[in-house]
Image 1: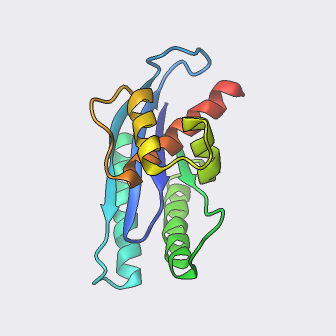
Image 2: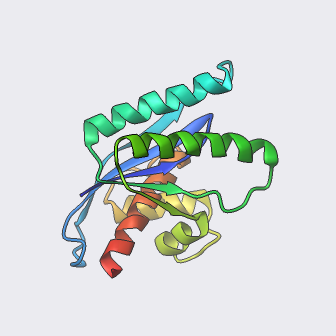
Length: 164
């Protein structure tokens, strides 16, 4: 099963694609990282143009990897209304893109993901990156942290499948 994890944002949307096999068994090598990175938009673009680019790039990723599931970070709380609105808009485009492709979407809070990946709900970005490097047997720490967060979201989804 291919899982696409997304860390939404208007300026930077992180994505991570993993392949999971035999999730009911607790084998060490049942997760493989296929790709990760970021969709970046220019602050010079209008809001609509930024959202259009996110949609276009996400469609390319979906065409290439054909994920069966999309796992996305939910906006559980926000410190700043200025950032919450654009993130919500980006998330809306992500949900719309998945719906058009008939890909089921699962939403998880940062707290849920951090707790499962590191054992600590207030883990720092570097702790997430180190944990994901280990879990996915990567040679290097995944960067930037938006991409590492997206991989963590995808990995978290696999934990739910194991326990169901």
